[in-house]
Each structure stands twice: as structure tokens, then as C-alpha cells.
Image (cartoon, rainbow, N blue to C red; front, side, top):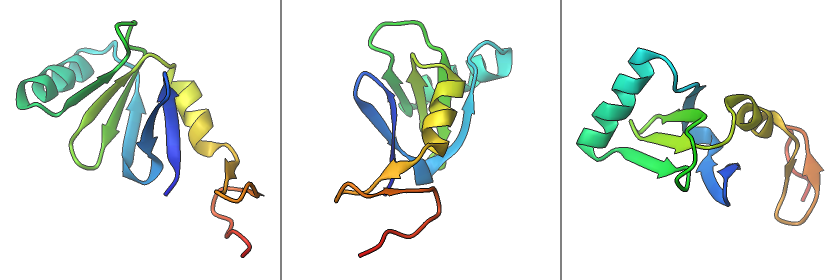
Length: 95
């Protein structure tokens, strides 16, 4: 399982991500409020300004203080196996 750092040491599973969006539009603000009302909102901003809204396949909404581009770059970046070998995304680890 690949984890993506969304700031302040918080991680989200890459396989569960559906979208990474900016929080400025009215529809996204509505999605955030609905998630808050349903109890599906995870605020990982540590009191900072929300810069990215992460939508997961489990209908959870995660708020991050990191720019959406930064999260996307981390998603596409080279990952490191537990044994320290670097692999390109989609490349199998050698055992």
C-alpha cells in the first residue's frame, strides 16, 4: 500500500484517492459541509488554511493545508519500498 503525505505527517492511501481539488468553488464548499454534517470529514490542516480537498472512494473528505499540485506530485513521485529500493510507479519491487 502506498501512502501519500498530505502535510504535518498525515498520510492517505493512494489507492483510495478519487480526486484532489481546490476548496474555492461553491460545489466543493457544499461537499465539505455535507461531509461535516455526516461525520465523514477529516480535517488534517492543523488549523491552517485549507488548500486541498481530497475525496476518497469511501466518501470521506480530507482537508489538507498542502497545495493540490504538491499532493499530486507526491502521488506521482518515485516510491520507496520498505527495504529502501526505489521503484517507479507501477514497477514491481525486486525480491
